Image (cartoon, rainbow, N blue to C red; front, side, top):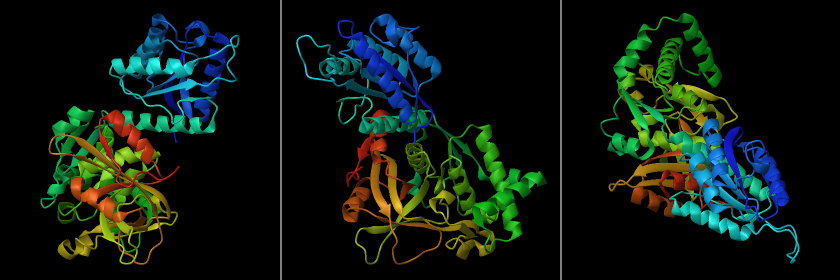
Length: 470
């Protein structure tokens, strides 16, 4: 999940304590970080004595190394008692606003008056105090004093890598806003300045007319043909005729070109009804393909939905989607339909989806102008749902809910997942209190990663059902 992420490691040492034991734990931690899928960046013996961080000079060297290597976060390990001020200086200077993870190393045997000892159980408290006094945010494992090769600790290191990916991936993101929100959907309003101020997220608005004009004028026949073939690999053409496929291919090419040109990390699109009446397709299949390629694409110009999808995709390391909290199952009390018109990414199922037309807007614009949705039923398995909202007082909240996709009676058009949770009434009450009708959804349980990332991003995690057991 965290393969290749550069994470700094500070082996915090104090010279009064055994350097041999400290070096041993330094080596074990590096191996464990690699086993967790991380790429550790750590001072070597050529940079600091024994590759440890003990003095102010060591801290400055380590912080510079981390900045040069552009680490996403920093792990501070008290490999013996540690020296709190250099450890804190190196972490804050090297993390450069990124997450910090703190742990200490356990003793290997019983204490005796003559045995070498670490005393990290005590020293770690001093390092934590130094971080707090400098206003730094940090987290630590469930067992904060441990052996670095413990499997539970290695898993937590991997989760921390995912947290770093989320926190750094969201800050400074660029979202494309293609068209205004649907007139009737005040639920999708957002504060552009607040996103920029809170997370450094820039929103770039573009008119649909510009996109349609570029798509209609596009004359790269080889690229159009190639994109049509890729669309058919994503989902069976079904009842979609060639003319609609050509329009979809042209639209996808133009959208991808704009995304690349403006360095967008996510998009939100006005998917009805201008796109049907003025261009003649529905963009769902394109949006699902963008999701699959790591570019969250939200329906109905829901920029907060894009942010929610982005958070989930970064946490899980895979494509997410946007869905409605759509319908409670008619028999099963805690099962509901997480549904949207046909925008789920292909990896949500092992089966191949089928392209169709938008059953709802077709009654208004005609089926011939509404082609481009994908009929897809999500495979059973664990799932996480998440939703960002900004309160009237400017506070940011992140709903986090874990559940399971299950087989259930009933079917619908578009993309669907029957999701079972612990208590749907409690969840629904939390939605009514704070959240709108859209949610991001991703396969896998990543709630704990989201909860920690929310802390570093300055969001309040809202978990009405708690989290599933690991």
